[in-house]
Length: 64
Picture 1 (cartoon, helix red, strand yellow):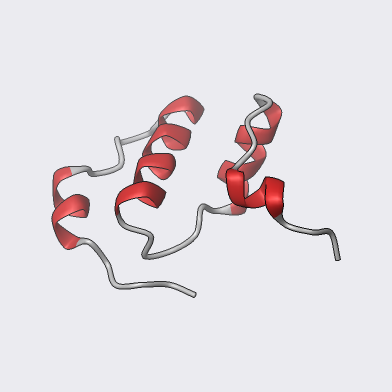
Picture 2 (spheres, one colour):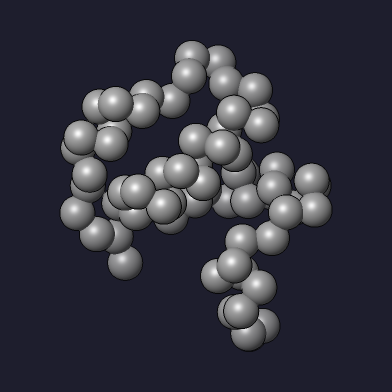
């Protein structure tokens, strides 16, 4: 469930133009911490998994 947007954070932290994968990951992790208006996209989660990174919420979720 999405929450309200943190417009100030979005204004002050635009996604870089043509971001490299590590920039996308960093932006979305900061976004999840400071705004939470939407979840981290699956594509970014895949990039994180390729690098051995695990989201805390993913680590605690039970398989279906």
